[in-house]
Image 1 (cartoon, protein in one colour):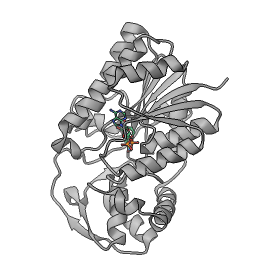
Image 2 (tube, rainbow, N blue to C red):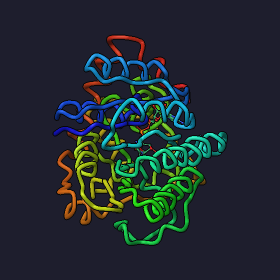
Image 3 (cartoon, rainbow, N blue to C red):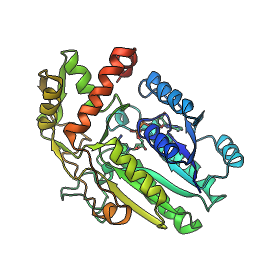
Image 4 (tube, protein in one colour):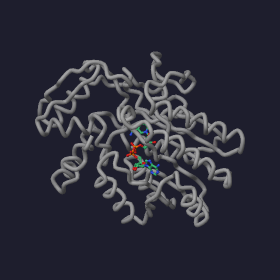
Length: 328
Ligand SMILES: NC(=O)c1ccc[n+]([C@@H]2O[C@H](COP(=O)([O-])OP(=O)(O)OC[C@H]3O[C@@H](n4cnc5c(N)ncnc54)[C@H](O)[C@@H]3O)[C@@H](O)[C@H]2O)c1
């Protein structure tokens, strides 16, 4: 029998793709999103319209609204919650710290409180590679300490993992946390470098490379993340945490060179100094996810970026999505 899943952050990048994949395999999905204006609302509305067209309801509301969430739970007999709603982004936390406490801490608590009255419902939730913070040992393993978050976003994700553990311990709720590593792909987030760089290169505007470009990221294609997330939802474990990355860190300058090659245009690179809060390298050890979830990333950077660019160029040509997309 298919599952019935409450999916938060359904109008977001990863939520949109996960919702479609769940529906396609025969699960029932009820989505929630507060449609905040952190980035283009037009993009979020477009994703939600596509989900609605596939028969996936996306309720407009906040995870911090317990009356609303309780009424949704009363209406549906959920087997699972997939919690992807959050205030994402590292730099935005400097100017809007409260948004992180509200969505990532209060919102997470609100959801955990809801699950106390339905402890049979399993929670799969998004953490982040950013919990590894200032660690220098690579690849990052789930057994490494995560006590030095480099920014407030990372601190809230680490807090989520601790809160999840306590609610599992106290109330027996099954929990699986997913540490996503730099996810990219079609319908992606305009605030992320791959998206903003593409826009800038096509507009012949400069791109700014922090830490003089000396950074590495374990870019992970959205379809791999979706496969890992679905496997985590199906995972029978009581409490666990998994890295979902590509296990292949790419130097920022190599990343830009790939983008230049695929776009057939050279980037105007401006090298900037350190950006406080940005870590030098992310690199996922995926042994645990491979063993327990059967997770094996399949899409390399060039193939994934090609798919992203196919979508981006079509979207830019077909409507005003891209020009509206980046307000950051
Ligand atoms: N994209 C990545 O590279 C990446 C990496 C690590 C972790 N993550 C985590 O994965 C999850 C999904 O990320 P994404 O890239 O899809 O981000 P996203 O911003 O596209 O999606 C998050 C969605 O949650 C919604 N939301 C935010 N606060 C809410 C609230 N209080 N109530 C209801 N809805 C709310 C937003 O409107 C948005 O549509 C997040 O938890 C994020 O922190 C993402």
